[in-house]
Length: 275
Image (spheres, rainbow, N blue to C red):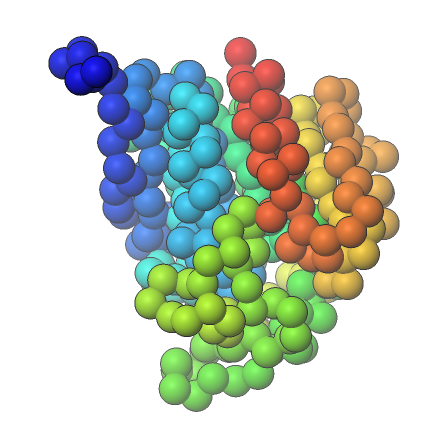
C-alpha cells in the first residue's frame, strides 16, 4: 500500500549553530514527524562528541520529542576550551532547542561530565529544564582524576588533550559506533582550560547543587571505575521527589549510556514529567 500524501514523515537531523556567550557550538537537531510533545537535550561526557549520541536523538524523535545533541566547548565541532563556564553551553543549547522546535517543555539527559554540567545549569537556571536524567554524573574528584590521566596531543595544539585510559575509547552514551571520521577505537579528543578547571573542580560540590532538586532520574553502574557509584547514592539522598535511581549491577562507566532499559526510561521520564 502506498503511504497517504498526508502521512507525516520524520525529517532527518540537521545541523544547528548555537551561540553560548560568544562561543560557537555545533549541534544536531532531531525533529519528530509531527508537532513535538516536548524536547530532550542530550549532553555528552568529557572527550566525547554529539555524534556518539545520535541514537538517543533518533529514539527521542521517534517517540514524539524534539532532540538536540551538541558539542560542548572544546569538543567536536565547537569552538573554545572546556572550562568552568561549560555549564552555560547546556543553557544555550536548551534555549536553542526550544526556539527551533517550538516544544512546550524541555528535559535533558547528561552523561558523566555532561551530567555534572547539566546539574550546574539546572541549578543556575531554575525552570529551564522540566526534568533531568543523569548518567553516572561525574564529581569534581573524578573529573580531576580524568585530567591527570590525559596525555598531551601536540598535533592538536597546545590546549588539546587526548585520553588514553583503557576502556574509554568507545562511544559513551547510547551509541557504540566510532566517532565520525575515525575508526572504531579512536581516542577521544578534547580541548581543556587546564589551569582554570583544576581549582574549579577541586571546589565543585555537586551534592550541594543537587540539594532539593526534583524530577531527577539517576542511572549508575555499581562497577563504574571512573565515577564512584557512591557519588550517585549521595546525590539521590538529597533530591526532592519525584526522583528515581536506576542501579545497574554491571556495565562500567559507559553501561548506563549503552543500556536499552535506561534509554527507554529516559524518554518515559521526560514525558511523565513534562506536563
